[in-house]
Image 1 (cartoon, rainbow, N blue to C red):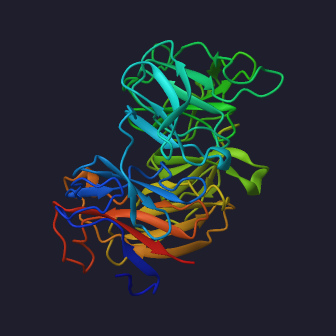
Image 2: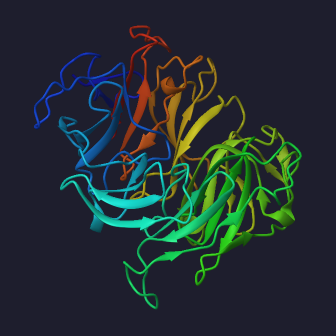
Length: 401
């Protein structure tokens, strides 16, 4: 049953079942919910492009469950012929029920989970470790890495290039040997930007480096930046920008749809002035030139955790889940922050999750495409909840429609 919780009075619904409870799938069998039944992560849109399906991970059986995107009733489990190791919904309505996937060897594919058919596939030049970020907003480009090199794949070539199955894969780009970070060059993730014009590499410590993608050859090279801000890593000449944690990327409609990355302030400047700007907990960086915009005011602000810009159909906002911070603004909250730098926010729910020593207990809040619902994970043990179990992690949706 949905509940309407203080102080926001928005409808909150738990959408996954109790551990061991049967899942009513059309295929029959004996599927059950596990103790960990939740979405993947804050930068992975769980709703399909048309909103009809919602992807949930499950430690019971089956390993994943597709729910009805509106009623949250189980629809089906994974297809028996789906060998995806890591996958994302295709962001285009034209491919609404297809997942962009890599397996554990060297195959990139599009897979329709409704018909259980592979619709496109590519044999990659080298095996990759997964999908670190997201495809471009149109679903055309993706950047994939083996932790030492990345390549850009054009999955849907447009004129003047011949269409699929014409193969357009860029050369491998070594991003380790020339990174120059004194702390080391271990990769956290690699992702194409929303426009497909850039690749961002996140190194250990949340050091961010921007590459330009050649639209003809798909080769990439570091994009020199005008400046590097105080206390941040890398060099501007080598493409490094302001350090951000738990980031996501978007097109900023308030800045001519420039590619931006938004995340948790990670250069240690929160509460200080940098280039004349008072730095709050949530910072936006423009990829073209590294320009920073503080999106929140640090005064009495709780510490932001994860951010998400998966609200494709409601551009101009970023959704932030905050750490507990009793007495501080946004304590344990999920809020939306406007990208125009005005400081405007919308407040949705408390996460009520106890995360100490438990990565999968983290909320990882992510909005639906229209930004009017937000999905998060919780064990329902914190912020006056106390009714859950540290070992039981479930998925919740707050609905502001």
